[in-house]
Length: 145
Image (cartoon, rainbow, N blue to C red; front, side, top):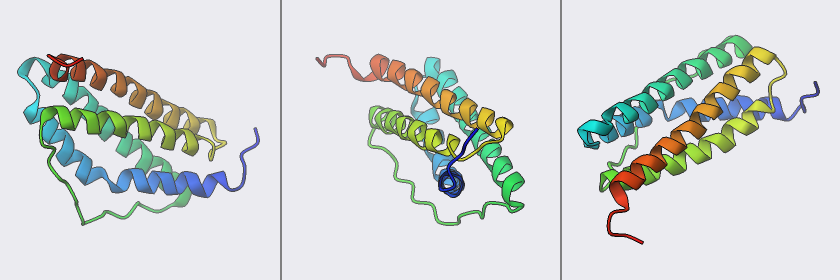
């Protein structure tokens, strides 16, 4: 399989970029988990748990191909959403952007196990988008057309 030379460094940058938001994402998902109605907390928790798994997988790929850890960022710029519905919208569009990023990252790896890991991550992101759409429909569309 041919992997363009330019795609590998871009894939590593995408991994760094994705993991650098780890702390902010943790705070964001904790907010959503606390704001979610009791009967929907399990859905939000499943998404959060997948995201934690993704960070671990991305760190593993990066370490295996570079021999280095991704530096931890100390700056966190978390702004709490105005409402649960605003948080859902932000999460949904974040998932869609992640699918685009991971699809680009996939182009940078020839080694099948890494391609499989990234495929698992971006298909999880697609699944998350469906779950956020479901939660948006339940919580944010009443009375709207």
